[in-house]
Length: 363
Image (cartoon, rainbow, N blue to C red; front, side, top):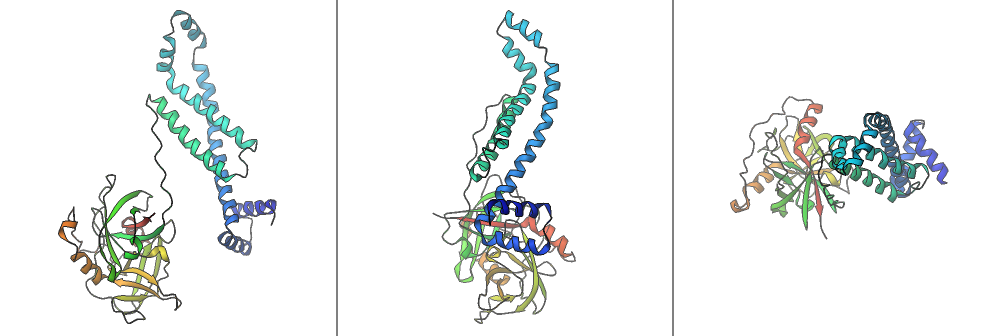
């Protein structure tokens, strides 16, 4: 497929002119062909930049109005009297000068786009986006008389990803041991996209369970935990569901409890019918009343549609085994369930604030 044909396919994909069959085939092509997916990403970034440019056009009319407000002749006269006019002009018109600088900056960048200097070059798209963000911040800070801040370092992609869920409102989380095994550093990200540093305070490898604590100064306590850990086993055939991060966005999955033991006759795990993927590992498994009855652990690769979850009774044992000197804050578990009677939509909306993406980094 030529570049022109691929570009045409991408444009049809985004403007909705593809048939359903063509759309399915194109999404499969994106999934299986990294070069195609790269082109799609470039297209999205370019459209976003053009949108930003459109928004900047509005500033031109504002700049014309500003120009009429500044008394150019008065400024010329003041120049002949004393060079302090520069300071006075900044004091009187600093906000207007900031807008003018902003228009000038984006005008230069726009010319680069329209002349094709940045066409079909992914790295330059990214550089342009970074420059736009940086210049916006710089102009704003100059307008308020502040020294521009140094850019924050960009964290590279995680080496491994899983899911964790809150045990307490003050930052204790549960996840799978295999998710954080051999980690040099761990970060957790909430549904709002906020990322926090966390540390591993205790593990039970035999149960594939781990306890984390968010120790980031920017973390604020969550609201009261709306679920509790069930101390008895779930019932065969009952409806269950989970939330997790097999993708960059939280995913809801529903099914039923298929067995009280896995295929190895290990009674510490349930077999469930809920579809899960590697990123779901460490996520909560809840019954239809909103009780946490397990922790998602693995997928059975030899049996289609079979997935495992460690029973909540073993998570409770793990919590009880944490040495007291490992806890810098109290770890008091909630005993009340506030999810009972809610619809699946209401459950997902309430629960997602307590389920985190776990990002693991190692050298």
